[in-house]
Image 1 (cartoon, rainbow, N blue to C red):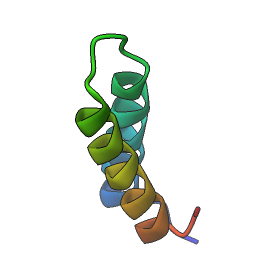
Image 2: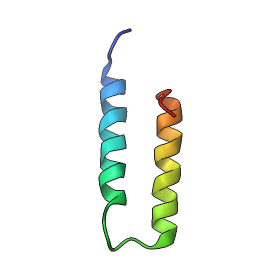
Image 3: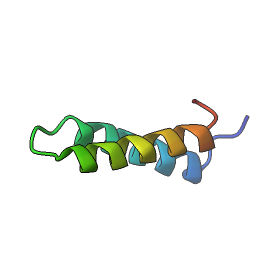
Length: 48
């Protein structure tokens, strides 16, 4: 399987979202939105 720039960008976005989720000053709404984005991205990447 070929590793592309799109794959790399998706991985970096996923890492960024996971780091952001660890921030303490997020509201529950923000956390829920980030979790949803992570799940969608993982599904796109066939990880979820």
